[in-house]
Amino acid sequence: MRFLQLGKLLLEVRREEEKEKLIMSAFIGWQMGAGGGMKFGEYLADLGLGENRDIIAPEVGKTTAAESIKKAETILAMARKKKDKGE
Image: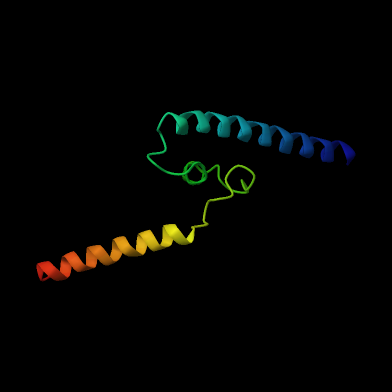
């Protein structure tokens, strides 16, 4: 029984090490522009590596008030343009 527990633990450690290697590779790709303007945490999530990555990217999913206001202003400007065009 102890042998199975140690084997399971070893598999988990190896899996985590592999994931860390993939994340490091993804970071290099993101720095070279592969993310297409995404934040690193969003890029990781897009690659399927983002779960439980609060240490690396705590900003994912959190928008600031300034970002929300800017987005709202953009949406209002688009709506005004459509209204002016008569759509």
